Length: 260
Image 1: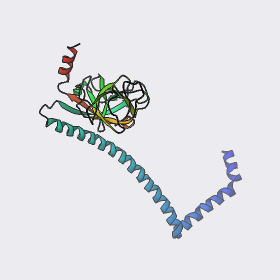
Image 2: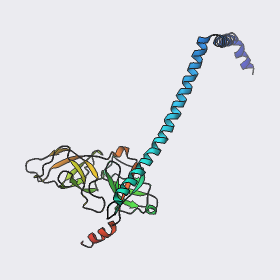
Image 3: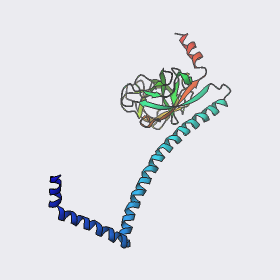
Image 4: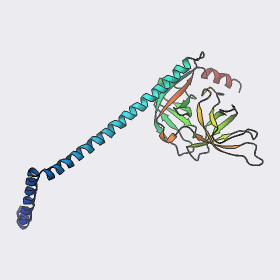
């Protein structure tokens, strides 16, 4: 206590000076419009900043809700279009990506749908832009998907311009690109050619966008083109997907296995 009193006495002149300065400032602010306006302006600016931050936070959650709604609407539209087909074998179920890798050789993603939602191994997965991958393992509430940016995933594709078949494979280098194999040298490949699903498996219907030809190399003596495809799906921004369910998939797979 004595030390505190000594400090107060030592700096008493300075403390009195500060007190007088504060008092003078308050008096000027109360009786002078310009400084008072400046103070209020500063306060209003701070309040506006707070509102802006709150607005951005609200906008974030609103955008997320809108994305969820858009994904559901896309799936509903595809289901409606499928229902117009007399076979009615395709159905689409929306899901959210809850975990994902994009920079490994064996990338995967986890979605929040499982066996309780009718999901089974081998079903295709797409989004509004194009193909995503194929379901590998299924739990009650979640499923793991092998994306097309996994070196173990092969996808049957075709050129939209002439239906020529090729096999999409990932080289493990860049999640934006994949390679299209098994395209013979007599096939004319042009930059910008559109690649879609072939429909030759029960996993995807024909015509789902996959990507476009980025470039093609044909060296002397090669039997096949070396074709680089720019993928439609941006895996770095993937949040919502649609599970592609084929009502006849189990029957088709049993028939195919019977030939082995």
